[in-house]
Image 1 (cartoon, rainbow, N blue to C red):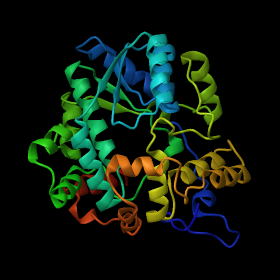
Image 2 (tube, rainbow, N blue to C red; image 1 turned 30 degrees about the vertical axis):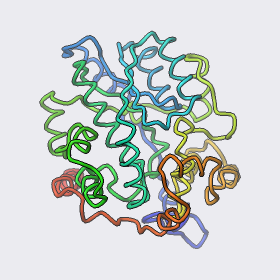
Image 3 (cartoon, rainbow, N blue to C red; image 1 turned 180 degrees about the vertical axis):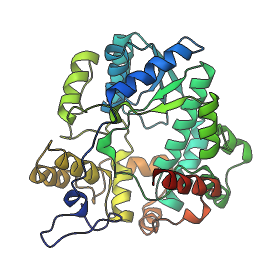
Amino acid sequence: MTDAYPGVTFGEDGVCSMCSSKKVFTPIGEEKLVQIFNATKAKKRGDYDALVPLSGGKDSMYILYLAVKVYNLKVMTMTYDNGFVSQIAIDNMERAVKEMNVKHVVCKPDEAVLKKIYKNMLLRSGDICGACGIAIRASMFKVASDYKIPIILFGISPLEDDSFLPDSTLDIERFKYIMKEAGNMNGKEIKDFLIYPGMNYFKLAFGKRTGKYAKEVRPLFFIENPSDKEMGDIIRRELGWQEDTTHEYSKHFDCIAEPFTNHVRQHIYGYERRICQYSNMVRRGEITREKALAMHKADNIAEKPANYKQMLDLFDITDADMENVYKIKPLKYERHVSLANKLFFRLMKLIKK
């Protein structure tokens, strides 16, 4: 890690505060996960026990394996087609859903609208992943609602802890402000993209409690996780999954925009998601610090990725536009975050205390 990461400090020995605090992942407990599954099975109103969103990468594939093979759940799978899904990820998903014999739904938004949204977000905030996150999450709730599925099993891993931006990129009010500022979107386009345009965390929490929205469950936070390599070995054997052999570490090869977005993050924030994940792997004892540094050096994040020109063409932007993107200040739009969400997170902090 570097001191660019929010809150990180270094001791005289050069060890960062995240390592010196001996932060170690502790699973919530598999018995609690099984209790959740048993409870949802008993109360389900439709044909499926759970919805498993698939990207074609390791984590979501491993969740599918766990759900079907380990916990014997009847699942439906879904994918949000944002135009950035790599061919190897598509092939992985096709093999997996066939092997597991599960229904697979693909949600595909209007390409022209999506292109405008990504361009607006990139030129103004330097990030497109937040817009993706908003749309994917909304699509998950919509599919779960349509098929009366009680829970959504997320593939987010403890390995990804600390790798997210400090900006509230998933805040809908913030998103709507940026679109209004851009001035090239009409109300229907924004509403259709968001699906739930008035959503905030209070409404979501109440909806989950009343059954209006499916509950979100992160199985990898309940159980001991295999190493990154072990996870790959399991899904290769069980699902016919194939690794991206062009990189030693392939957590996000399912998205062709990932090298580009990581490159932009490095310029704006001084750190990016992979260094955070490598650091977690070091703290978990999966790899040595020297190995992590070598992997990060090989990533060469500061340099333009191989598909840089392809990304600029997709977003219809220029090198001159990118020079302005690199200068965007973090937390630029935090004053436009939903007041309800701010209050929700403050309340959650008080409850935890």
